[in-house]
Amino acid sequence: MNATSAFFAPKKSTNVRLSLDQLIARTARGAAARLFPARAERRLRDFMLTPQRPAADNASDLVRSDNAQRVPYASRWLRVWSFGEGPTILLAHGWSGYAAQFDAWIEPLVSAGHRVVLFDAPAHGGSGGRQTNIMDMAGAIQHVAGLYGPVHAIIAHSFGAPATLFALRHGLSVGRLVLMAAPLSLTKFSLFVAHVLGLPLSVRGRMQRNMERKLGFRWDETDTDTVLADLAATRPLDVLLVHDRRDREVPFASSERIAAAVPSARLFATEGSGHTRLLRNSAVIAEAARFVRAANDTRRAA
Image (cartoon, rainbow, N blue to C red; front, side, top):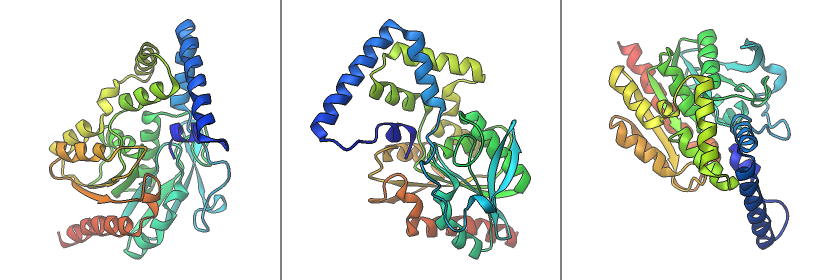
């Protein structure tokens, strides 16, 4: 579940009353934002930078806090797990996600002869920090890859996909990518959030400009289709896109657009797994395992 859906998860009430309450709250926020735009911009920025942690520890028997390594990173620390031996496969979860969402992937990938490395991103799961951003998450991916690499393939879910591409654009090297339910852009996501919150476009635009100035890059530099197309044109890079046609958080059209921008990418579609259940779909896990195993077989033959 991403930050927006977690924030607006229905409470126990009738749908009619809930919709009315949400409409009233949305109207009130919009009016307050017009009166106090700077305050509204700060609230929107904090919302965009603060992932939701799970209410309870949802770790599996394999991915527990007591068998994680604590890795220092940018004045904080990350929880990192490593299983098996062989070419390293790095798993990157999405916004408001956590490493244990990949627990069903560990045994199949280890059995296929891989070392599987997964971690809680900054301000996620059991890792340190309260806020993070795409550059920070990309830095964590690079940091973990540097400690446990070389990395032969990365499997990334949701916001983990653009964070991975940001890391690749800034020095990380990998030959194969599995991008699951990859969103297209920060701008589109922020427009959606502002719309749901009832905030004026002027407030959203101000928030984007301030964040771009603070972080030192334009948001359109992280657009998934454009970045992936640029990377694929400049280096050997095999890409598997995975998306569910009924995904309500990141539309299936996002991966269709990415596939159109990168003709060499292959799109594997599912039906009925949604956004996060995709991570427990056995057909998806098997397809991704075959995809990254093919890379190993090719390298060994060479």
